[in-house]
Image (cartoon, rainbow, N blue to C red; front, side, top):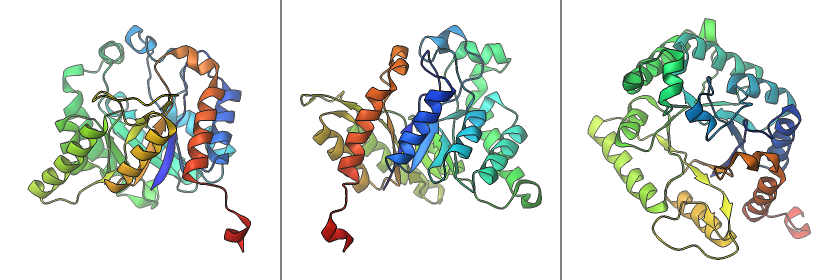
Length: 287
């Protein structure tokens, strides 16, 4: 199982130097994947959670591709209806080539009603628009002479039944965001049922979970996967591995934009997980 990190490409603490440090920290700690979020028009509903400056994901990942050498680069998630599918297909294919095949394209339907209005896109049709978008992107990529032959994995976000169905029909992986472990267990079982019903392959399982270490054990049904003591977090990762997770993305953002002013707090948490998940090799292991 691979481990990725949701990098904070927004907020009062976001600037080129901090983004560079995020990328070098994630790669230096040995994580497998670096992902960023997507918004285009920072309307009031977006700004409440993800205030400006907000660094557009394709631009940001293209820059970080030149800073890093190994770590994969992805979107968690690109809001599909916000761009023309041929623009998405072109930018994704170019980024994949420029990064030597390191792109993971995570997509979702979006939630910010005011942002949809600002962009002139009907909010009520976002599900159908996302389906059409994904089909058009895949059709464009079929022209390998124009878009290149490197395969780009598509992760479909969405915790709902509609999201599960979309992942089965159109995705290489299902990419749920910040759920409890019981919900993830039930949803993985449902994902397999839907795939069997449609006689399609079961997509890979690639959840994004919280990363919120606490000094004391957290109990209760509302505890998100990735919340609690380091032992609870590692136990969650182990349970996700047993559920068949291909990749787990750790999300250190707790919801307060002021956190972006102190990224070192998130980096310490990531270092703790990295040390547990990839313990240093001993002399005996080297020999």
